[in-house]
Length: 138
Ligand SMILES: [Zn+2]
Image (cartoon, rainbow, N blue to C red; front, side, top):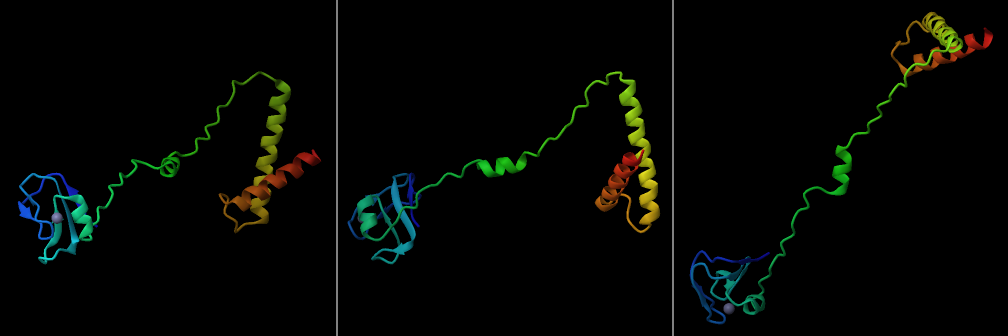
C-alpha cells in the first residue's frame, strides 16, 4: 500500500525513468514495493510509479458515527406522566378495594411460597393472580 506524498522529505532520482525531485515536491511512494535500485518505489511521475508496481491506497475517511452506533446511544425513554387526579368517590373506593386485595394477596403469596423472593417476577405474578381471585370473590 503506497501513498502520494505532497511534500517529499528527501530529494531523489527514479532509477527507472530518471526523474528527479526535490524536498517538498509531490512524489509517489510505496514502502512495500522495491525499485531496481533496491529501495522503496518512489517517483514524481505517477504512471512510472505504477509501472514499477507501486500502488496508491485510497484515503477512506472514517464516518464520525454510523447510524447504528448513534441508535445504540439513545436509550428508550418510557417516562409516564400521571394525569391530574379527578375527584371520583366511586373510583376511590374501587382503588381502595384493589389495594386491599393486593395487600391480602401479598400475605397469601408469602404464606404459600415462603422461599420465594418478594422482589422476583414469579412472586409478583402469583400476587397479581391472587389479587384477581380475591377481587373476583368480593
Ligand atoms: Zn520514475
